Image (cartoon, rainbow, N blue to C red; front, top):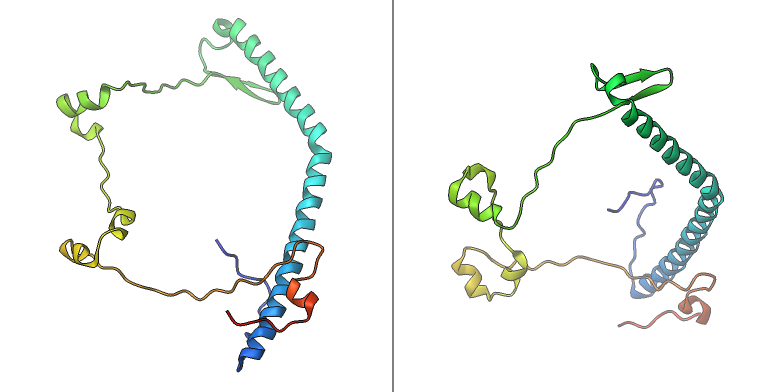
Length: 179
């Protein structure tokens, strides 16, 4: 998903191919600067995260060990502590047991449900596969009341130089050839 820039810049009025080439060069340089800036940002964030890793790992290990100790204690004293309530309020939190269940089924379950029911236990989702339709001819599409809708989307693809280098077009000082 594209995010809208925080700054609004008015689009230029381009009146010639030469101006288009000049703006494409500007776009290329700006895209290269953006890539370099994002790379530097990612590098700095990674360094910050790396610096906190040891403390995060220590905290996670301690949490895991204390949770295990509390679980062992609760299991050893289950009848005494949890005979009336499923949870026990302590000064700094709650410990307890949650009841839950899950349904497990095998390969035969679907066929048996289809045969014996209940029918609402089986869901079937039907949808049109556009990838298959794309392979059909226009005549075949018409038979199924579908049609191919051609569309065009404008794009720009600025030449983005490797980080730390200027775009080749800018380095050579060329105006760019039409392709």
